[in-house]
Image (cartoon, rainbow, N blue to C red):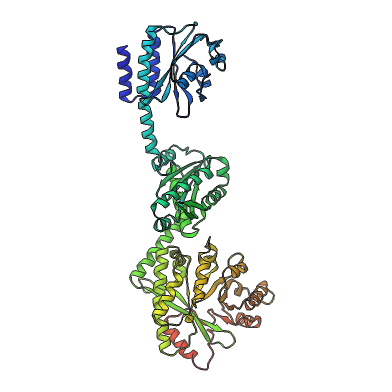
Length: 603
């Protein structure tokens, strides 16, 4: 027995596989005791039994014992684990404890079974060690000594294995959420098949408002939110596997066929589950998340390519569709590169003071006089070329770039307004365009009011232009709330590019404004026989009933201006009157506008 102990203890010390170790133990004992059949079963914390070793037993027999529960009538082994004491059955055919299992043992010629529990140092059952006999008998004294040694060796091996498993679990499980961690995700990703396109996909989930929660309610509340979101993701993603990659980022490996068939629907289902109100440390919080996804394609070759694609999609979603889902497409990398390039250009221009305001007049169509000007952002290139905002519009999705541009534009506008007021020029008002990024802070109205009051400029000299896209991109009431705050403080608001979004008339109810600016796409098609004329006429009637002013954008011909006058449109702007010009040129226009002559149309 000493040699047997040394063999097994050496295997345990080396860290050999548990099954390999217990198989060797059974084989050595069966060699010492011819005619005896050895078996080792493990028992999990929930009391379920799993075959570990039985080298002389058929695989079908061991497989039949998989997952059965211990109990007072669960064969010799299940009963021994339940009672935590040895159980001897000398006649399997008649013993009631074997009633549900004898059909498995008797055809193999097994007539008796003696089983002993294997317990850890705390007395908890880890498994059982059993002898099967081919005749009806119990153990001999010598066999009892051997089994005592074997049970001790099995306890050492099983306890060590549990420690190893627990260390591996801790190394692979995120302690906060109990999801698989980044290391676990990396291993799972590397093991995915990369031969069949469409066989699997990946969703990367970014929790949008964790920082706000941490800053407002504290990190304990933020941790509770992370746990709650993890639970919701795991439930909504099932049967797919979910992981927490760290911070506010999660991942889901999609292998379920239904999920892969409709990846957008799967993502939307997860977003809805995440977005339900959550109670965290006594605070009611509405979690918000953004998802990017990709599916393994024929040209990906390796799993890491899909991961990169999903990251690209997430980045794009956060910049353009925050709170929604974007699926990777082959050109998205180029789009992101272009956006980053635009952000770099804008950042450099801000640092070099190459961002300036140009102005396009807003004209009364009946008198030709200037009643307002729209401030348009222009960037001066390194070579002195004036670049329109349309060429760097991608940068406006970046909050820092958008904030920098708005801040710079406001400083230019305020200085120009003060100059024109000092000269006694009548310019009406100046309008400034704001992006969705400008609304993120929730302080846009206060920022505008503070700047104008500090300079002693009446608030009615400023009009804020908000596009329909900005209104539509808001999944909550943040934009509507700030628009209301602006108007309550005396600022006027215009809904720009009106007609380009969906449900435009609905926006007039959700976002009450002072002016509607009809998009150029309607003006381009303006003709008495075209439906655009009927639409414009209808908008004019609605605006009058809602006490809103209407201006037409992009007027380029005398015919368009004349048709708009006939329809009753009071205001317009466009190349027919003037493109966007610098402050010096506009000042000359305003000086001329102060006289008796009409604003001349550009020929």
